[in-house]
Image 1 (cartoon, rainbow, N blue to C red):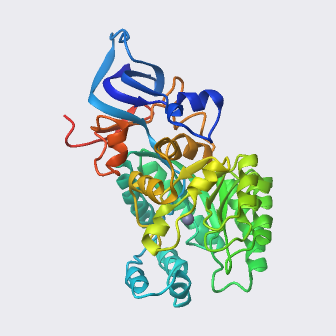
Image 2 (image 1 turned 30 degrees about the horizontal axis):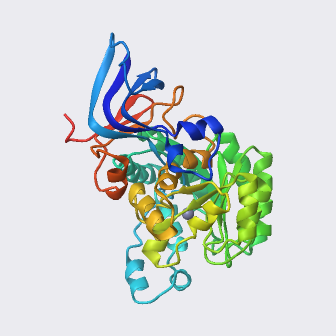
Image 3 (image 1 turned 60 degrees about the vertical axis):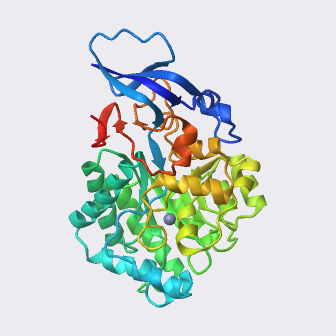
Length: 416
Ligand SMILES: [Zn+2]
């Protein structure tokens, strides 16, 4: 059985970027927009697209897009959805003038989430994560990366990753798992070196045995892990086939960007204080620079200079950094619009940054993130009549229908 989606006002394909296998220096024409379009799905994949001469309709389900926009399924390439407990009280503390570091010193921050998460069952963690993932789905997100990092011991990190695996079976979305054991140093650990040694020798082999993650991550930052310390972790993980992504240079320049380039990381994220030299190295190495405007909006830290990254030749993605403390936003479209306003990205860069470039940040660029023949049929049908309207809406309206691998994953109650 085939599915034809017709009467599409604007279909965003990103075909020119796919054809050139390019993810940077993105211009309007790179979006490959087709007006008055149709799209044909077969066996979960895109079979054909066009703008006239509808294909033969025998044995075909026909879906009228009602002159709305069709976009690739959105991709959120950086989230922390597996946690227990609420950190809402920290928001009031921040409004009274406390910094991220001061709240952490008072027992808040990551350590607070760790304490709550360690006490929770795998099932309750998975249920909580699923709740947030379904909220993302209602905003059009069909693929997301999700991290551990609120366990910070061998058993607790495994516990969190197992919860993530369970959550991925409870949601229709594609989930890419990352072990972020180097999110912070747990209070019971003697020092960074001893902690990293334990994670390398005891955690990494078990992750690969159980197939619990495809990436590892580390928070490369003052008072957390230095580039040199994190490098040990990343190199050992690479030997086991686990690829690299990095929280880099959020509060200070810790040479995280250069580290990401030297390791061939898939992505380096945050980057407010990354040096131009580090960013140039990332551009040359094909490391995606990921903007996380949610933390800037919610905690008042500076926005990353996305314009500079794009102008230096970096591929730039935008992600939610969804987490309970510093970015509680599940609406990727809203954050992408914020990256336009505050990080000075242009419309085409924003759209590519939450589709094909985000896909590149997850190593999925030949499978999802664009609407071209042979790609997975992951897409959203929106009531917006143009891409300009879709962008200006800042994620207010939900998609009418979301497809993942050619199947309806979400249907708005307003869509008959
Ligand atoms: Zn993060």
